[in-house]
Length: 46
Image (cartoon, rainbow, N blue to C red; front, side, top):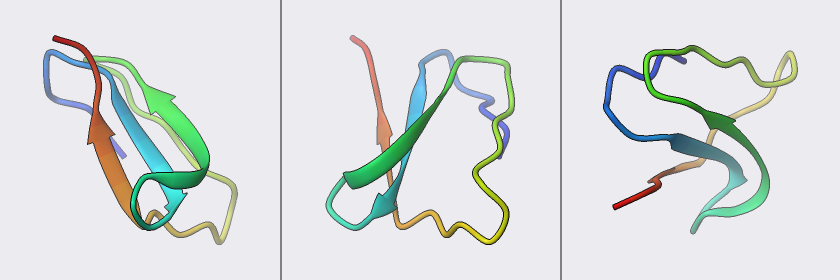
């Protein structure tokens, strides 16, 4: 997943922003464990 926003994005393994998560800072990309599914996303910061 690539973050093309000005804020940090947090991707969660479960719905309603719960479960394990990975933070992806602005202008970066992140990878979850192989076979993992992203079920919800939150945009962090003001």
